[in-house]
Length: 261
Image (tube, rainbow, N blue to C red; front, side, top):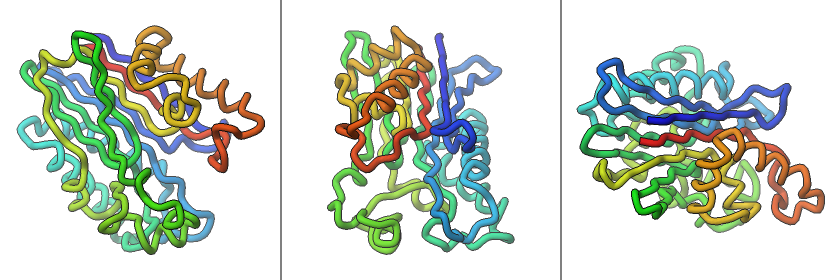
């Protein structure tokens, strides 16, 4: 087995709000990957004394532990338990009903000798490569399908589509959101490798159009997880006319996890 992980903040002086981990249980049976992309908080008060980085660290650490210690629990249950445990860590000090309480996108994958389970919530991506080289992208595309008007401002998004029916979902303070995730199981023999990407890294495909998802996985296999992040940084810097980035931030936290089974 080969594993590789890279994570880089969007700005050197700003905390990285992503979380990435690979867990290989001491028993040697299978493993798991966890990838979170923290949602950048608004500049005004958002009801919580903690940072988004604090939240992703706590939720990500709990998901990493539970994904291997609760191997019989389905991944939505693992996510639900992790959210509940994280909520208990700050419910006495923070207003967790605020629509921008710290939250994150989630990618989970867990493998055994017989199966690979997966869970994707919001706009991070998970790629499966089959033995014949075919690549399948597991995406939660609800955010991208929303009318642009519903995302025109943070206030509009918060009141109409963020963690609401008909909108999009993130892991925040409600454990029930785990049931909204995109989930599935693939036979272990049908998976050769996995790549998980936060949207700061998936810009390689989704904004800069350097290739499709198959090309992206091939690039990671050859250049490594760090190589993909560095290429995205090069593309961001050279897009001076903002032909590809448009109104998006120039640099975003970017994380990649690669696992070759």
